[in-house]
Length: 273
Image (cartoon, rainbow, N blue to C red; front, top):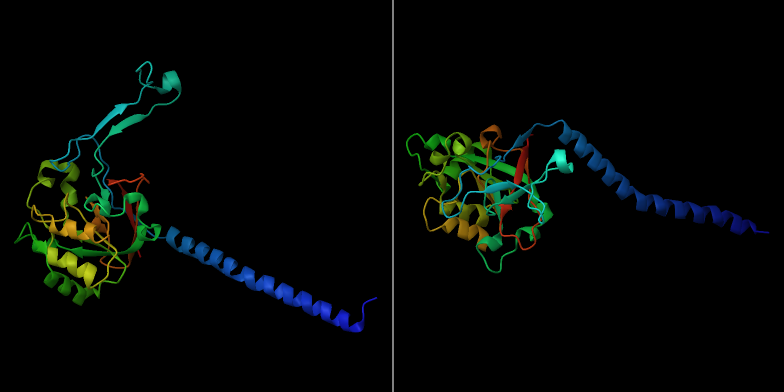
């Protein structure tokens, strides 16, 4: 028979054990609640697609060829699969990685840079900042967004936050489908190299993006080289930045996990505040 002392101690031990279990379980429960609440909030928000649909006729850098999209067929018979005959159909895509809205990983310009499958997942959802180059384009159609322009933007909207994704709005995206030859014109409105350096060195941004086929206003590719050789990625040929506020949104960017990939079409979208 238990002594009175042991009878007293046993509930105490059980209570302590139960307390420890409750203490261990609380963070997980709280985390689940946080995620559930976050999803409930996100589900009520407006989403904006920042990605172009692309096809064989989409504009591409002249150094690359146009995409080819053909029906996939049986490798033995070379007959295309059809729903009527086989129950399915599919497509063979022949494209350069840098096609349509796409990601450029560091390895695109740096032998020792990480490839697209190595970009950290936490860098694929970030606070989104949109700086607007369009007010300058009436007088200077190929305006390079300068540090002075950025300082003026910060006076109005606040300091660019550390760890953010900064996109340059030029409204070039409107010509991607409607006037692809105009979309490919060069020079074009873009980042000034000094601004790219300032954003990464003085503001500590994680990544940047833009609407044009290239980062730079010149053939030297100074800005793109700097971004990629300093371990950052960029998103090119973005769309609908005019539908996103300057601050307060989130960007989500995804792409296929190609082993040792040097670039690929990406899907980017904004979650508005």
